[in-house]
Length: 288
Image (cartoon, rainbow, N blue to C red; front, side, top):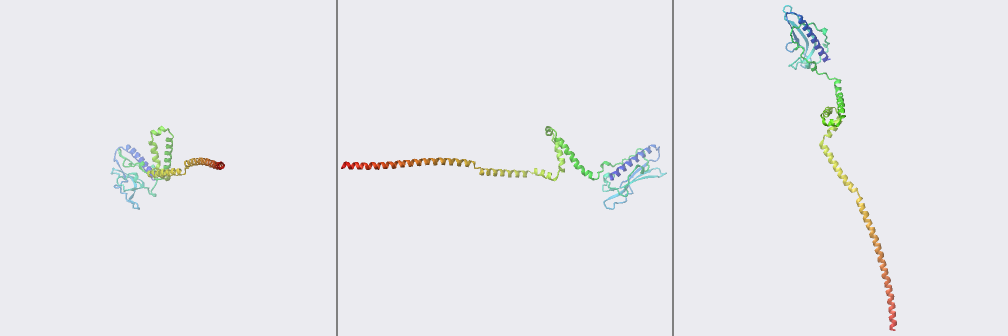
């Protein structure tokens, strides 16, 4: 509403200036009018009411005065525009629209061209002193629409990023600055969880610690596998058992040979004893 009132006031002043210029061109000669904007801090006698809040602001009714130099008539035409609160802390330029605060609810009325009195302006008069403010310099009031513009802008950037990533690989490799710029712009709008994940990915000491722990775990796994792997020992055990069986078979054969030899020796001793007995008998017969 404040911006609307300011813009309507500027439009009314412009219309009045055009009317005055037209009238001045028709006026042949005589006293030239003098136009004064009673909105200046030092020259306007109507800057009397200070804001009750003690904020250093003054209420200034914008009064446009047209005074003619004709002493015979001495007429003064005045056009009063809605009062506005000015912040006089910025003493350098009170005509800036950025210093205008919210107008009073009691005096806030829309300005129309019909409410302005006809004014007379001399030829070649400069109206820049009345129209020095720039409506575009007025910062818009914070609203829900401006707060919701952030997600919509982010959505548009995401769509643009999607379009860029859908292009060819050669194009992305040659020009990555645009993708990088979009990612940097949307980073503040990411959820806290995603930002935390990004920060953790950027922590090099944490990465090094995790890599070291993984390496030690792999070494322990290799040692455990070596301890639990008995295939080599099992093969060696089977080889030894086979050799033992071979040796046992050989021992059995040798024992059998020994028994056979012992039996043969015993039979030989028996035959020798028989022969000895026969020999003794034969010798006894011979001696007899």
